[in-house]
Length: 240
Ligand code: GLP
Image 1 (cartoon, rainbow, N blue to C red):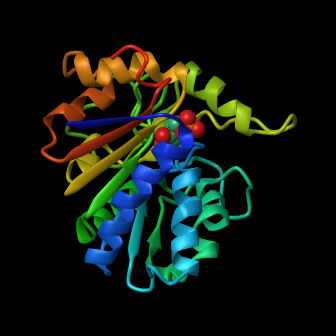
Image 2: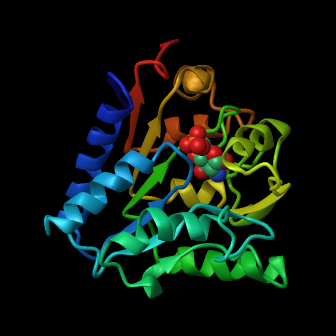
């Protein structure tokens, strides 16, 4: 695991951007595993800027996202499909047909998990971008998620619901469950890039890097992956 500590959120985003930009330049038809949350926003802005300047193109790029809330679809401002269109897909030259997310409005979630696993099998990630939950989750794989798991429905922990409620309006409620790639799907990526910012993540960062590899801290599984780069800001690195 390569760990890079940066001064702040901006520098963390710069380092993450350079790595992602190299993948896109070297492999113009790469599959990018993408994440939502506040952490990757700076990285996405930089990718948009580079695409506007024609330094990179998404024309042949494919994307697979980690997760989606159950019950939310493309018209819901809080859905991850909406987030991706607003922050990345709608601002670059990507073909929306090449962008995949689990469907939060599926009629039958058992078949939706099978459908999404099929998409992941067909599009192994050249690189998987990850954020980190305060409870050590990656995607929506909460503590206890099996390391050999594939796409599944998950009940969100109280910590996650509380953390994510900051992004919801006064009259909106955080869904109690989500559909997420499993840990085995994340570990299949050729490379993994994790970005972490903020003091409230420092314990999870410590457990992920220095702690035992245990399902109690889902991110600790990354110690077993051959090509992981973790980019931290100073606050997130506080316990290392
Ligand atoms: C969410 C997402 C994760 C994300 C994490 C951290 O629950 N499912 O993929 O990495 O929480 O979010 P943030 O970057 O806003 O701290």
